[in-house]
Image (cartoon, rainbow, N blue to C red; front, top):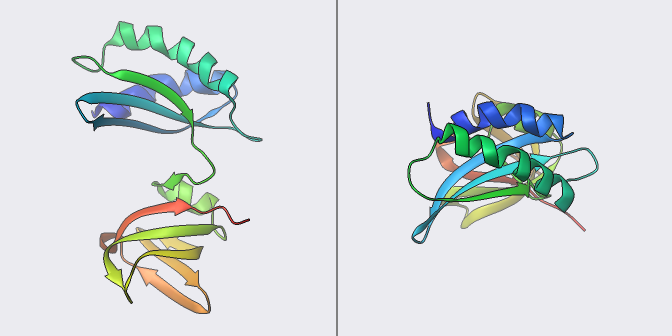
Length: 150
C-alpha cells in the first residue's frame, strides 16, 4: 500500500470526526525536503482552526504508526477553491463547474484550456469551451483543476 493510501486510511475517521472531509493526501519532494499534506474540505469552507485541530489529532498517530521512513514536514491545508480533481467522484461532484484542463501536448496551440465540465466517463473528460464540445482521453490530460470566475 502506498504511503498516501495508508495515511488516508487512518486519517479519514479523524478528519471526519472534526466535521471535515479528507479531500486528498499528498506525499511529495520539494527541493531536499519531503512533505506529507492532508487537504481538507468542508461545507462553508475550511478555516485555520479546522486545519490546526486535525493536525494536532493526526500528528501523534503519524508518530505511532510511522508510515514514512526518514524526516518530512507534515501540513494540513484547505483543498482550496481551485482544487485539483483526481478521482471519479470529484468529477461527478463538479459536473457543470468551470475548470481548467492542462494538457501534456498543446491542442490548437493551447496547453491550458478554460472550459466547463460536462461529463466524465472512465477517464474520458467532456468539456464545453466557448461553443465547442471537446472530449479528452485520459492520456492527454496532465491535470484538471476547478476554476473560480469573478
